Length: 106
Image (cartoon, rainbow, N blue to C red; front, side):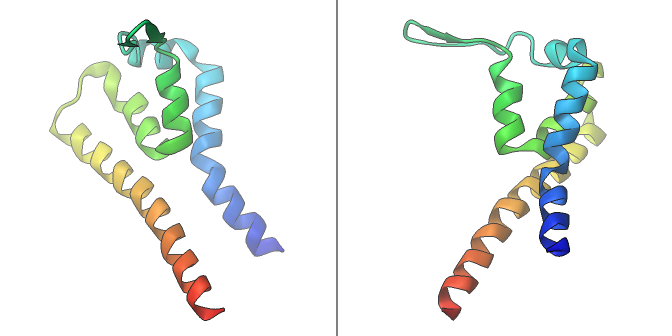
């Protein structure tokens, strides 16, 4: 039971951190994603939808982007974003691998 709770906390940690950052410093998150509104046909997605999508799909990358973006992205910041993206992809890939192992063993 304790192991499951630990895994849930680790999996949810970037999402919780981003939510706390968003609530404590909303102007920074708004400034980072300002100008990201998208129009498809008659529908326009507001700029606040992108941090929400990032929160759900790629939380480590979203946190890294909010962290490095305000001053402009240089070479070192691209490395930080790449590492964050690898963390997100490994989380998604690891879940699929575990599912395949569990399914093949039963």
